[in-house]
Image (cartoon, rainbow, N blue to C red):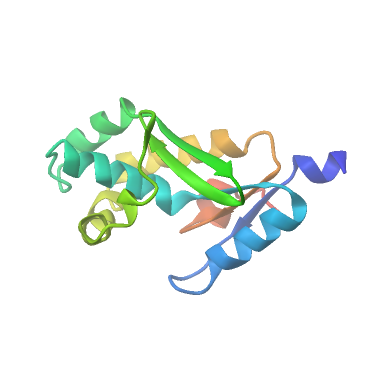
Length: 143
């Protein structure tokens, strides 16, 4: 099991293909940490809207992200999302966040910083990640 704990599993694919469903099942079966990378972008979007930062302003979003702690915690088989220590799991799924998250995620500097954070989360292995570009950009060495 030691070797198995060290791997990182990437589940990549188009929107609405069932990536999250499969990732959660695999993580639960292997007792790995499930990381919903989309929730990280939603968390930043939530904070940007709360702080009244224009989601089209890449520089301001990047600076906001640099000063934002985004935590993903597993509790009772579910993932909780915290922004700067505040529980936002449900808030990041609200329609206003959903409407704006694609604008946030398209900024190159924001994506680079998110990829760096996602790679740090995965560096010790024992994780299952899903999301856009996971297998190609975030975890190219994943199995």
